[in-house]
Amino acid sequence: MKHFVAPEPRDLATRLARAERRTARERAARLEAEAIAEQGLRRLYESQQRLLLLQRITDGANQTAEIETALHVAVTEICRHMDWSFGNALLVSGQGDTVTGCDVWYAADPDVMFPFVEASRGVSFGKGAGLPGRVLMDVRPHWIDNVMVDPNFPRVAAAAQCGLAAACAFPVMVGDEVAGVLEFYARRLIVPDHDLLGIMGQIGTQLGRVIERDRARRGLIHDALHDAMTRLPNRTLFMERAESGFARMRSRQGAGMAVMVVDLDGFKAINDTLGHHAGDALLIEIARRMQACIAAAEDTARDGGAAWQATLARVGGDEFNVLVDGVDDPASVGDLADTIHRCLAAPSVLAGTHVRCQASIGIAHGTTAYGDVGQMLRDADLAMYRAKSHGRGQSVTFTDQLGVEVRHRTQLEQELRQAIAERQFVLHSSRSCR
Image: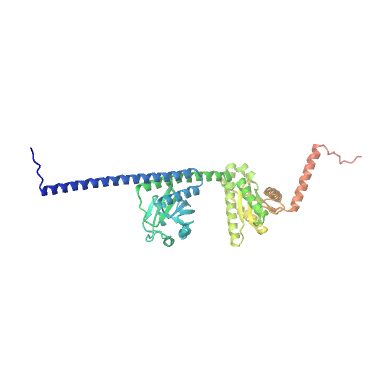
């Protein structure tokens, strides 16, 4: 029979120490495993939340054709998800070398952020200038840890007023082209991470598709309202603007208006002798000249305190219309017609031949006697035909007397046609009988 022998105190202490170390190792391993699991769950949760963010922005982008609406959804959702204080959208303008705020922004506290909101609305940055300009130049995201000490941050005073510290900005891409920039600001450090960069890249791509659709839509609208050859407004756009001006005139909310009918003199002969290709080139040149001289006349009038605006449109083969909207002095319309005559006076070179093309211009001033724009254009057309009867390069302003004369002549022509149709004419010999 064996007898139990108690361990020496020294051996017992050693065993207890080993057990405690083993327990400590097991506890540390368990805590590490729990931390890893917790970190993994947190990353999974954050990943799911960011995917939901992308989904919300994608849904918003797919439900609208307006880029401003899609940008507003994106800026708002990102700021709320990331708990950032301010977000702003900018679009590339000009020749792709400038990015400009499009008044699409989000502020967690608009009253507090007011100075920075005002500093960001409509602001423009060239390549490399400010945070958006750096994104435009480098075609990649940019981060600023502290805007207060950044040497290339023009809005630092407004940011200081609002207590902003860190900033980041991301490109909105259309293919390889930067079409816009999203910038964000916070009062705490913004730490970039791989997942955030990936999500923001996908958001930029989604918004880029909206920009592509918006450009296509605007292109279709532009083509529907402009002449394909001269790129001037066509009859549809001219009538839209003329009817708006006429409504303002009738409601006495705006100044007067006038319309011109401009018909080229001798244009058919140019087509017949030099060919339609030369005729098309002449139309493009004449449109360019008239557009330039009308714009110069607008600038001169503006410098003199007048505020009228003119729309030049090609409405037919060699026929153009001019709307003068918001005109106070009727004499200025006649001056504009004279300006058009002068700009057309210089010859054009077509197929090695110097060609001079003048125009006959009919003018009608808007009055409350007119029921619609169509009546004004009818009278301007009558004045144009009267100008043609006076020779090339003439202008005639419609008057009531001219209207009476034309109506009498038209009535006489109708009566003569009716008399011929009804055989009312009787032939008499003028020879005397012997």
